[in-house]
Length: 71
Image 1 (cartoon, rainbow, N blue to C red):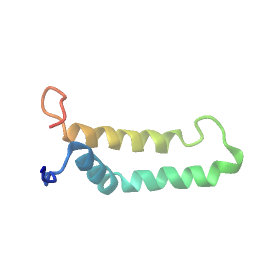
Image 2: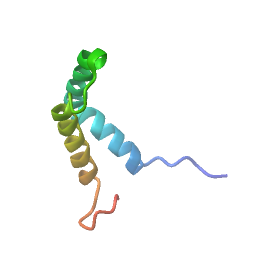
Image 3: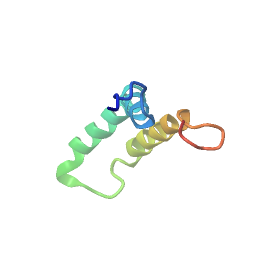
Image 4: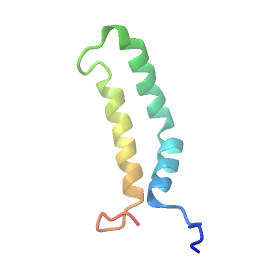
């Protein structure tokens, strides 16, 4: 019988880190989308999306070793 893995998986680490660290960027992007949803235009929330995306990329990099592998 296998026991449940007690250590945190890389995906869980990313999810936890990105939701705590990137929450303000996610909120800003969500508010922008909400404000513009009736008049959606290309790149209307580009700045907010780029900041949120950069935060997520940084969160992923924190989980990588020097060769880019998630540990």
